[in-house]
Every structure is written in C-alpha cells, then in structure tokens.
Amino acid sequence: MTTTPVHPFDLIGLDGLLSEEEREIQKTVRAMGDKELRPHIAEWFEHGLPAREVARNLGELGVLGMHLEGYGCAGTNAVSYGLACLELEAVDSGLRSLVSVQGSLAMYAIWKYGTEEHKQQWLPGMAAGEKIGCFGLTEPDAGSDPGSMRTNARRDGDDWVLNGTKMWITNGSVADVAVVWARAEDGVRGFVVPAGTPGFSAPEITRKLSLRASVTSELVLDEVRLPADAMLPHARGLSGPLGCLNEARYGIVFGALGAARDCLETALSYVADRTVFGRSLASYQLTQQKLADMTVELDKGILLALRLGRLKDEGRITPEQISVGKLNNVREALDIARQCRTLLGANGITLEYPVLRHANNLESVLTYEGTSEVHTLAIGRALTGEAAFR
Image 1 (cartoon, rainbow, N blue to C red):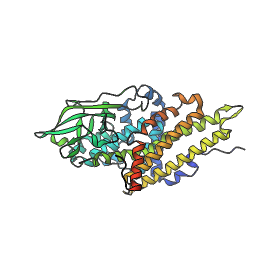
Image 2: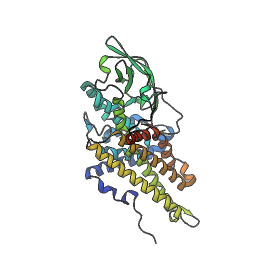
Image 3: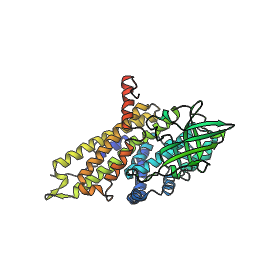
Image 4: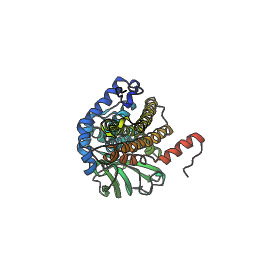
C-alpha cells in the first residue's frame, strides 16, 4: 500500500509556527535562490564565487543586514533573518557565510559599536551589496582563544598604527572595508580599515576542499596607519567581537538546517526514482529507517532554532543558548548530509547532486564561529558553573 508522501517539514506542521510575514520572507528568499543562485552553484563551488555580483543580488533581495534597523536595512525580526539564512544555506553554505559575515559581523559591528559617521559612511552601501565587508578576529595562532591575539594597535600622535595577521577571513580579498580587532593599551579595540589603506593586504586562501563558493583570505597589517576616528568607540575588550560572533552563530543555527533539508529533499527524490533489485529504493526498510531518523532530527533542529529565534526577538537569548543551537544543529546537519550520501551511492560524490558539497561545507561550519568543543564547554560551564577552557 502506498500513500502520498509528505515533506519533512509538513510531518509535524512546522509552517504553523510561523507568521504570514515570516513565511512570505522565507518563500521569497527560496524563490530567488532557486532561480538566481542554484543553477550556478556547482560551477561556483568548482571555480569560485563572483562575490561582487552575488552581493549586489543579495542586496537587492534585502537580506544583507536585514535584522538591523535603519541605514537601508530591512529591520526584520530574528526569526525572519534565520529563515533567510536557512534558505541561502540550502543552496550553499558559502552564500550564507557571505551574508553572515556582511550583516552579522561587519555591519553589526559598525551598527552596534561605531559612530554615526561610521554608520552613514558604510552601512547603506553594505546593505545594498555595493560595498563588501569582512571581520578580522581569528589569527593563525588564535582561533578558539581570541584573547591570545597578537595583532596590536599603538598610538602615534593622533593616529593609530596596526600590525598583525588575521586568518580564515571570509570576504577578505573582495572587501571594501575590514573590521579589525587588535590589542591596544586599554584592551581589545575594533577598527574600521578601508581596503587600499597602505600596509593592508588580503591575499586569498586557495586549494580549499570546503566552502569553495566563498572567498576566504588572510589579512596582513604592516604598519597600517589610521586616523583616531577609525576606532569603534563603543567596544572595549573581547565582549565587542564576541557579541558580533553571537549574531553570526545565531544565523548558523538556522542556516545549517537549510543544507540538511536540501540533502534530505535530494535523497527523497532520488530513492523514489532509483530501482534496486526490481523495487524502488524507497520501499526498503533500511532506507526508510534512515529517512525517518534524519527527518526527526531535522524537525527537532527547526523547533530548537525557532525557540531561539523567539527568545532573540524578545531580547532574552543568552550565549549558552546559542551554543546549544549551533552545537546541535550543525552536528545533526552534517550527519544528515553524510547519511544522504550513502543513499545516493556513487552518484552522491558528484557535483550533479548537492549532498557531498553540503557535507564538505558543513565540515567548516562545524568548526568556525566556535568549534563544537568550545560550544560543548560553554554549555558545560552554564550547567556546572565551572569554566573548563584552561
């Protein structure tokens, strides 16, 4: 006996948890992704992303800094932003990374910690996708422990002079502006560094096996001289950059599930058409067990993401709650991608299907914006009151 298949999200009626506006935003982003991005993504993964062209398209869509107020930003709620991240990562994690770094790191840092002059100078162009930003925190020897950063900022008269190196910086080589964090006499400070400033360079990192449809770079600061007003005045200490990271991590909580959904949708379509031993691959119990387990985890992840989104919209979300979401949802999304690859067999390793591309990307998502180990320890600290980081 056969029945009409249901979509994984329809199994427990997830749409009923969204407002009409949220559903419409999700539908709009998905439609744009399917029409403008998905047809090209395999080529971009193989050969590189035309970042400026894509940024302008995303700016026209209104998703760059969409959760921020004013300066050309849409001012949507957190759940809508999360759903947009989900739909973009359903196409490719590199696209969601571009949006996350642009809106939740570079734009958010300027919006939250900058002067009115900073905001007027950069945010409207960044919201439109006409200017691209990057966020310089991670260093070659300071990833999970940003407090050990070596990049420094010293005063020289009224100017600041920056020296140091940042690593694994999304958008770096194509950025018009970098928000760079450096150690000054009074603690960690953020600086707005326009591309083209003497002493600033951003060589691209190549030969990647993951996030290939994303620009990843090193930032080199060699006696970079900046005026006094280049500093972000409202951020001092690590709370500044960590506050930005929480914004980006929140987007990942939703985004990773988009990659998982795309893998699961692909697998469902594939097993329905694939014949093995004279029967549909979908009709075998082992296949259905995998599909059922993946759908349960995907739907649980959506419920968790929506709960965190509502908390964020209420202004009540905490860093450890974001850690729960990032740890669980990326881990489960990666497992779903791997399981879907097994259902596609050898076809699963080609760019004709998205599953191994998603799996490769999610290997990076698992470790950036805080590794699984760090998020585990953040949750452990919340539960025990004991910090086990050192």
